Length: 322
Image (cartoon, rainbow, N blue to C red; front, side, top):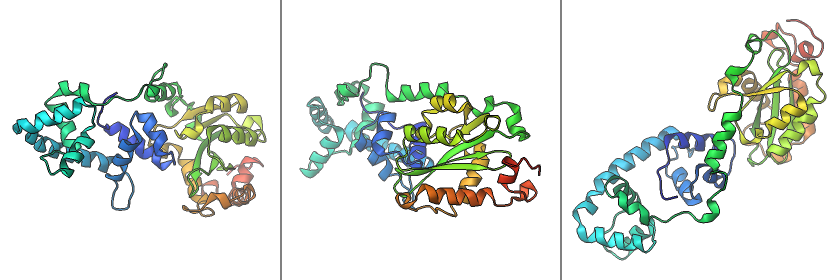
């Protein structure tokens, strides 16, 4: 596959995946880009705080493309430069290598963004000379992007949930998510019951889908069957084993829409409370399951105004009515 611009939709995916701690290598594979291309995309589109945001990235990209079109006039007007560039493309050199070498040698040049803009806007027949990805990236059953799209299509979305879930009139409907440690590879997975606010949580030394699934199944095994009906999850990759979770917990699992954290408001609010114990930047490698259990126990016994000052424990376990 030759060079293609990163789309606005892909930028929102990149932002989301970075926020959940996915590695740049995994993100690059999912969107079908080289690691170096993704690294360049992230590094040159960070905001003043050093964070990659999709909106700013798209705005900067549009600005660069407009400038690229303006600079493309160099290639349009300079026949000698245009011929030299095409000769190097035919030798399988990349636009970045061509521009960098000519600049180093003190010859007329254009930067690689300009060359890509020229090819896609004025000389599409040159695309055949752009270097192709190696065969190892080809997959018999489709690219990572198509695989990802298929997986997304299989998920039950939040608007398919029974109306009783929205009403908050019966116990047994949960919301799930993770919070990440400083290392990004460690996490705490949280599950919050919507009516009572009662929570369970597991420390994940390795925040993989398999590890999360195993610990989630083990934790819910202690919950009475009548109190586990549905769960609404975040879209993170760590929940990709959700079908096995469904089978082993007996709950029907739904997913919020991407970038719609408010659709899991109970869980988001609870994670904010849990951050009082494990602030952002905390190295979770030093956190134990006992530390997590202690924090969860205190939160489950903390009176809540919305429960008429009963505790989540009193509502969920003892069956007291607010």
